[in-house]
Image 1 (tube, one colour):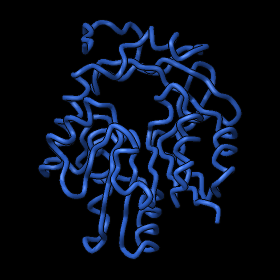
Image 2 (tube, one colour; image 1 turned 45 degrees about the vertical axis):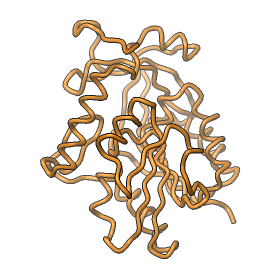
Image 3 (cartoon, helix red, strand yellow; image 1 turned 120 degrees about the vertical axis):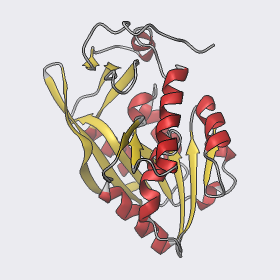
Image 4 (cartoon, one colour; image 1 turned 90 degrees about the horizontal axis):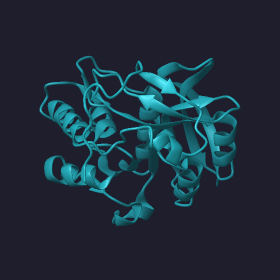
Length: 258
């Protein structure tokens, strides 16, 4: 059953709080992702983009001036060129198509695009009902993707911080041997990992959920077992304050070792 929370639930200002010892401990303090209000806000924002009323959407907020990660776009285009004008993306945790609708206008029309989003079941149901077409597909599992071996880019944008075991998930996804792995919008400390509670700004929506700040060195070690980290870049979120510490939202472009 979906949970609904009163608008005055959150007493603290938006931001990141705590240093929790377990996901369950943090989860008990939070409202979670399951609230239907989040899904509906995201749906309406993505519809605005699809219908031409906004240029792109991020975290249910619409924007009317175009902005994207040019580093991520460069890998999408490079992969397409190397694959004979074919781009097949596994967008894990891709919401209702936030990255797809953001990058699609920058990909030439002659490129064959297959964009596969893996998400929570209620997002997948809405995605199939409202947004799915011959290019954009929604799945509850990576193993539901028809041509999994044909994926040439794995996109992990703002997803690793929001799963219980991010390094375990990453290790499982790396076994797919996708030629390029792109990590974007991922908050990291240089040599420290911390589990917090994130309180979302109310202008986005009323919610809180567990959120990891990853260890940058640990993340690079995991990736380097099979991939070459081609580039590390600053992501859109910039510097983030967590108590007395400062973290940075970063991205990584990685190429499979051959």
